[in-house]
Image (cartoon, rainbow, N blue to C red; front, side, top):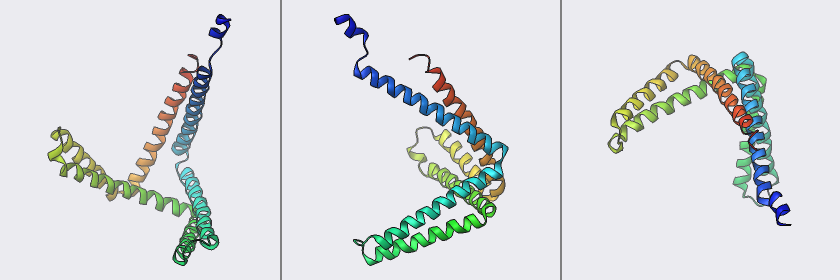
Length: 193
């Protein structure tokens, strides 16, 4: 009787096995999706950007409807809160409809906006590193990081179209590489269990 109990997996072992299978499936699925999206970004960059803009526009419209509905239906909110929700909802819907009407222009604007925002963040990050130089144990590395960060940020802000293309290309390559690594991780752990 004790030998049959020892050969049967316990509830903890079964649960651990199920969790491991779920993790492998998540890695495999996420990896394959990342590879697919990365290839789409690299092969059809403009179409992929327009598709993402369409998804964001749809999200904006749905979010706007939700905000407006909260403002119209939430009887326990104050009048100011209800009006604010309705106005915010209308703004989201207008932005989403505008993006749908001109998807290519909206995609280009979004790319430039994000590129400039990343550039500004890199500049601020570089200066922040310099401002905290006294607290750093590796002053040379901190100064090098700050210079690279500021130069990269200035290059993105000064040439946002080129920067957007470069970041989009980098995103596509990163997705393919990281997706392939996740697929490899999922498949390499499959035989050990």
